[in-house]
Image 1 (cartoon, rainbow, N blue to C red):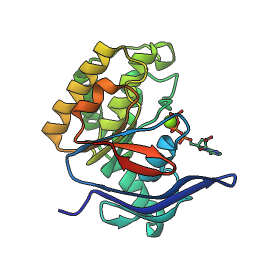
Image 2: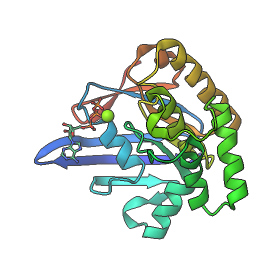
Image 3: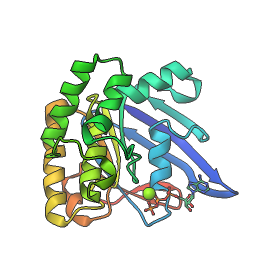
Image 4: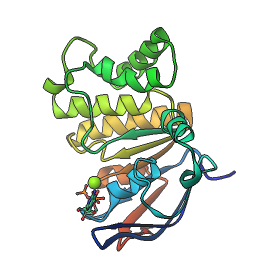
Length: 221
Ligand SMILES: Nc1ncnc2c1ncn2[C@@H]1O[C@H](COP(=O)(O)OP(=O)(O)OP(=O)(O)O)[C@@H](O)[C@H]1O
Ligand SMILES: [Mg+2]
């Protein structure tokens, strides 16, 4: 089967510093790939490129068989809305909006009707155990906001979920619960999960653990 994402020779330079240096990554449908690496190694940089948020890369990137560099704005928007789900390390939630209002946005942008979009968002928030009420996300706990960000990444049932430390704010037990839910959803929906993880407790669940070091990915086992 064709890879859902194929990255070859990816390079990224910031202010003269080579952060990614000829990195290769092929992602298969349905697999869970964990990315590890020290702070500043370039993990978020890599996810931003795979998620088509950063287009200033060298090398070749195919997402869903489409060459990202050659894609039109409309094609990129369609990839971001339908094919890819994204969980930012620092959430990027709209603070004045509720959990439901934040989670529903990608579904609305993807053209689902208001009712259908709200149904999808409620389902995924329920699944992740986020309470649905009038509380603005600004005053939710960090762990609660993290789950809202995850719900927003999942609301359109993406083929690939790119998650940047989705359990960074959680204690070990809550992290286990979160990854149980992600496993369950991944098996039900068949999406590929690429997650930056900082804790060793999660690594045994991954099909592959790759360490980002000196600008490239290295298999750890
Ligand atoms: N927009 C930018 N401009 C300049 N430098 C940047 C930019 N984005 C990232 N960098 C630099 O690239 C390097 C990698 O950053 P990145 O955020 O990808 O690391 P990371 O592995 O995700 O780290 P952490 O574990 O702390 O989240 C860092 O040295 C960072 O300062
Ligand atoms: Mg990071």
